[in-house]
Every structure is written in C-alpha cells, then in structure tokens.
Image (cartoon, rainbow, N blue to C red; front, top):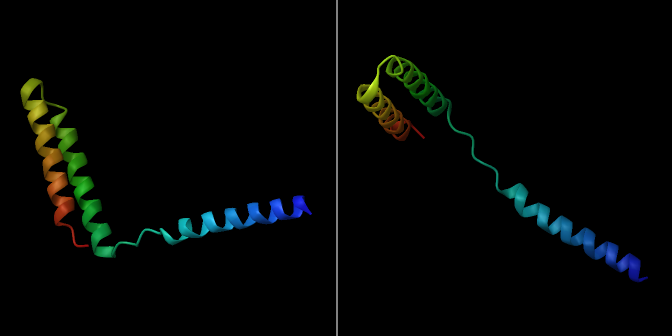
Length: 79
C-alpha cells in the first residue's frame, strides 16, 4: 500500500512540475521581424569582416561601431 501511495505521489509531483514548463513557450516573431534581424546580422557580418582587415585602434573602433549598429538595428526591428 505504501509503495502505491509513494508512486502515485511521485507521478503527481512530476506531472505538476511539467505543466508550468509547457506554458512557457516563446511567441513566434513576425516574418518582418525575422527578415529585419537577418538583415541586421548580415550587415554586421559584412562590417566585421571589413573591420578585421584593419589594424590597431581602427580595427577595435570599427568592430565596436559594427556592434553598436547591430544592436540599434535589432532594437528598431518591427516586433
């Protein structure tokens, strides 16, 4: 009897812990948002590739500018 109750309690506990995890689904972004973010990432990749051809302070400044531009671009993307 004790084994049955323990098994049932364990099953209920596992089921109760699984339900909240299923409710935390991320909402899908709109196609416009996905396209805008993809464009931002592509632009960043091109800018970073160009920045890596430079040396010294120019390189680090160009990389920081590319990162800032990407961050601003993603923030401005339609939701």
